[in-house]
Length: 409
Image (cartoon, rainbow, N blue to C red; front, side):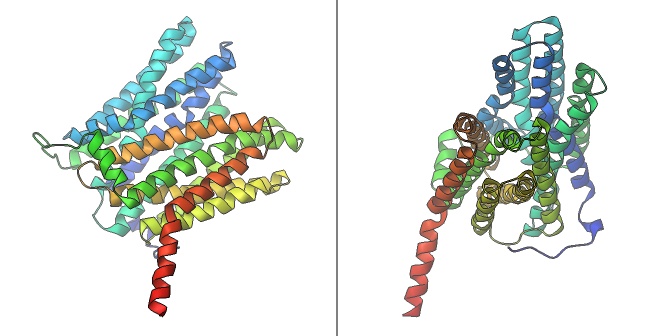
């Protein structure tokens, strides 16, 4: 699949990149645990499921404004300062939400969580847009850095919910959640120090593409269109896994915590996938990798769909995590390699917004279908991903066959 040679460990992580990875993990532990934190708080204060879901939606809905955030980052000569401010506002906003629960002011909770939702875009995709400025402009070096970024997502999104679940069994919810949601404050300190080592670019008077121009760039570029569609369809499909996990456990007479363990194994797979491509970066062209890894993701979804017992499902979820982590790294490479210099941050955030929107839709559809039949969400996911692969790469494959036939004559 185009893996490069492994390099000595000492060369895998430079000083600036090491600080970035630490900052990213801390930030993503908070964002990864935020939805679980809100559900726990809502339930502890006696809120109904609908209210808890609406509060959790406040954390994801603002991601759809990603292109707006991307433009603010692109226009700034000190984008890391904007991200540091977002880290502070996220931590402050979440503490305000905790107080809103204590004071029984739901309006304050919703408002604070909307602020957190806006800021979390900067902690996730926004932070990733600044990664390549910290490393050399070589494909192998850039992809290794993106592999570290992928790993930071896997670690953060696994450890955040894990520590909340572990510590809330022994300490008050408000204390545990307050501490974990304060982690972005440490991220802010680290990236402010990083900003001192990055070159200040004077962007005064520089024209930046508007939304129409960005959309024109994306839809006139074959590689960017394929990146957008494949990223969105994969997010839609994978969103079904956490919901199906709970129903799988029940159908096999397992406890509900068994379903949570399946999701945990998926997270472990994400970390393993990130480690794999960190040690041996992918070298193939990004579009080719989208197809190859997309097919692998389809196969792992089939493995999950064919699961007949808990052990088989564990293997399927683990493999899904590994492959989806690699797929995510490929989409990061595609976003950066196919985007023009002007508008790169906006395109990055457009794809991120589409991914969040598709994941939200996937969760909604999976929730509706799973009540009709447990395997229906996975069948839907497999169909959607298959259609996306055909739409994105079917014509390319036909052209190659025609070209080969012409040469043969």
